[in-house]
Amino acid sequence: MTPEGQIKAKIDRVLDSYFPLVYKFKPVPSGYGHQSVDYLVCAVGLFVGIEAKAPGKTPTSRQDDTLDKIRRAGGAILVISDDAGVARLDELLKNQTNGNRYEDHE
Image 1: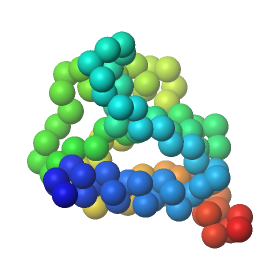
Image 2: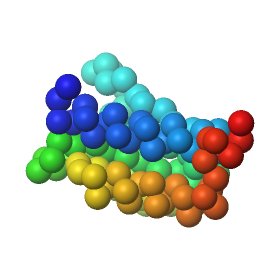
Image 3: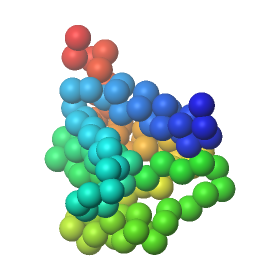
């Protein structure tokens, strides 16, 4: 698995742990239409755009532009390239969902 793939796997685990309070969509790049970021997430009314990167990498100018549009529209944005970024995502979701996770809804 690539370094970015490892980060995405960690992001997926965190997002999935908050189901059904968190909706995630992972757009598939096709070369047609609008560009997006790796994850579009809704967490109890909070919209979050997430770009996953390999450690040491930064978003492209197109990805930065998309993240800026999300931010200007009132959404939260995260660029995650390490475990600290994954922890920030978990903390954001914990605060937004009042600590409720999947196992709380079974």
